[in-house]
Length: 100
Image 1 (cartoon, helix red, strand yellow):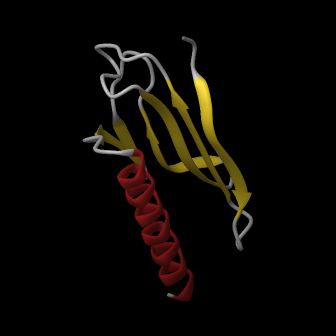
Image 2 (tube, rainbow, N blue to C red):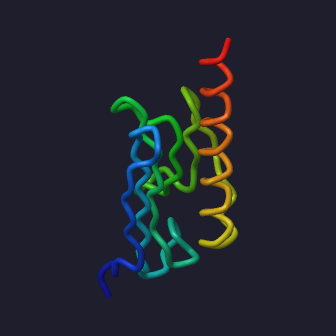
Image 3 (cartoon, helix red, strand yellow):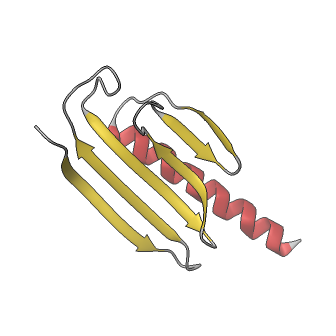
């Protein structure tokens, strides 16, 4: 079985930034024991600010601002929830910085 795309959303938010979510069902492997591949990204001024993915050989991880750290995958629902929480936190911080 090859990868089957099950979700692909790409939107531009109210500030003109891009939110893109891609999720696939894939064969279970040591790298993806739960059978999903994913890429969720929030792009501001052509730069990834928030990202969650499980790229080949890297495992589940999260990009937040300038850092990268392991991510504990639980479910696609929890993944989306965590991603949107980070996006909203980033928007809040950017808004507060613009007010200062």
